[in-house]
Image 1 (cartoon, rainbow, N blue to C red):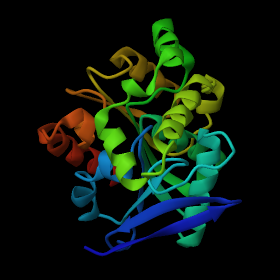
Image 2 (tube, rainbow, N blue to C red):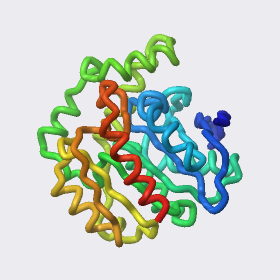
Image 3 (cartoon, helix red, strand yellow):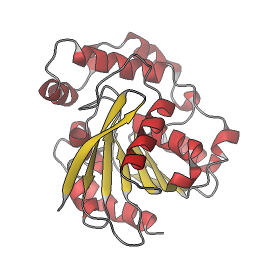
Image 4 (tube, one colour):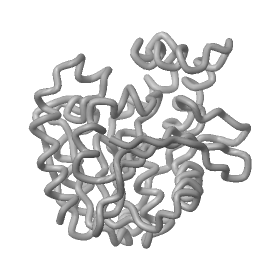
Length: 261
């Protein structure tokens, strides 16, 4: 399998990206956006080999995550969507399918809203699009969260890539503040998404299946997939799966079927 990697500059933010596999005629690349605290490896290392056998895969790391260094600007879905557009421009890719996981799902939605022509199909996995998706206790817990609450999988991955003192603490604060400041989107805004969309959720995820159904109902023509799992184990996410990849292997054919239309 071919592999390349590099950085794309967006007004001083240099977003790290990887390209796995070769372009497939008639099919756009599949863009993968990891969740908060994650790297490409912790989120998608098990998934990429399964997907790249069918289509080219582009994976990115958002600001402050993995090999993409932080700047002085806030980490938002809209800022990251702009960074991704810089990646696509550097790779001379006009259209992609997109899979965004957790907070990466926010970036996927922002990208689909900001540049509809760039997103052919959209998968938003284990995410939410409005603040009422979770109870008040979630927001209270997030406001009081500390680095000790971060999964060791994420801590270890960041320390390996960024051993400089203070980097991990900054990563945690970027992600915490990103969620606390998340404004969500109105039903009217979500109703303007033009890409065929699949909403994916584990039945023991952060939000309920009822909320996921409501979310899918606000995006024109969206489909809904509820899998038996938690927050990302069905994608092989390391912190969630603990190495048990059975749910991922059962889910991938469904994702590919959606992407193939």
